[in-house]
Length: 344
Ligand SMILES: Nc1nc2c(ncn2[C@@H]2O[C@H](COP(=O)(O)OP(=O)(O)OP(=O)(O)O)[C@@H](O)[C@H]2O)c(=O)[nH]1
Ligand SMILES: [K+]
Ligand SMILES: [Mg+2]
Image 1 (cartoon, rainbow, N blue to C red):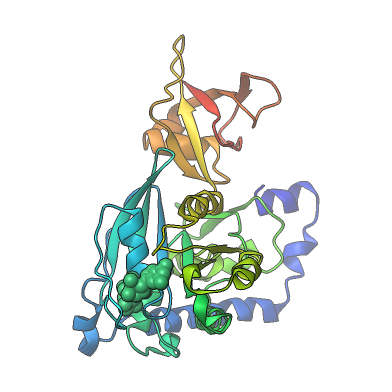
Image 2: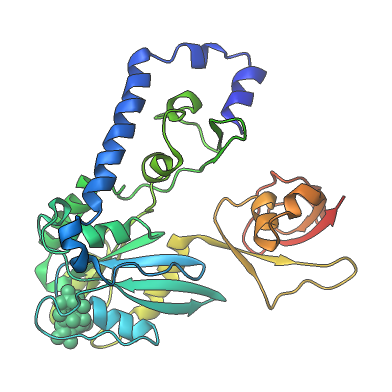
């Protein structure tokens, strides 16, 4: 629900008016900080050559980045899961750039990115840390790949690195949408109760700052402990029970299917099928959207101008009370719903 509508309709004008001036200044401060952070993450001119090969085009329905210390098995994993071969070897820093591959799963194309190993201090620019972290920020899900033989040490260090650059850990993405208004400013929409920000607070921020700060680019990272062929059964058992964790062995191809299932859950993609009037739904070609997508999102995916010609839609599936149900643009779609759009 739009925050402003909420404020007006429920007569809670106080909410906006009582925003502390300090909060407003905090908003400005965060905007500045976001700018500095963005600069920090950009490779400096002299190191431009080092950044070569990191600008991989986004493709497919979602992007997953592999982050981890050297030689944990990131490249081995990419080569196993995709048709791309990424060189793997027993020495550290085998991979020096970003290598993209594609996982095809349940009709979706998931872009998987292999990256160089990062070292402690990556966030401050050690090694290729900045470039790697900058790529991680563009991902829908980050897989923290860990060497199971190194126990918990790697996980704690890696979490510290990622958190120090503002990558939110183990928190789901907030459902906040925004777009620039024609007359200036930003229109703001949220499906959750906001505790940390408000419409007024985000006005001083530019679109880019909003993307990087208010709506973090990265969802929950997932810990994947590789090389379980090298540890005891007890240790496998212990690691597998840790929250947000999956144990695998690339070497012995163990538990990879389970990892894919979990990854799919984590991505929480929503498959929508379309149907023309008087015809059966087209189950061969799903529209794949992120969780929390509305009818409006579906329209945008079909055609840019469809939302403006939209009259109503008929929806069959778990998102409706009865099927079909006549719904408007703001109706939230659920996984495997069928939709028929009626134009004006
Ligand atoms: N025992 C065992 N070895 C593995 C497993 N997965 C990968 N390896 C080995 O670990 C070494 C490093 O693998 P890579 O895939 O190059 O690791 P990486 O994380 O890409 O390394 P960098 O690119 O150097 O950061 C190689 O010798 C692999 O054969 C596994 O499940 N078990
Ligand atoms: K390696
Ligand atoms: Mg590698």
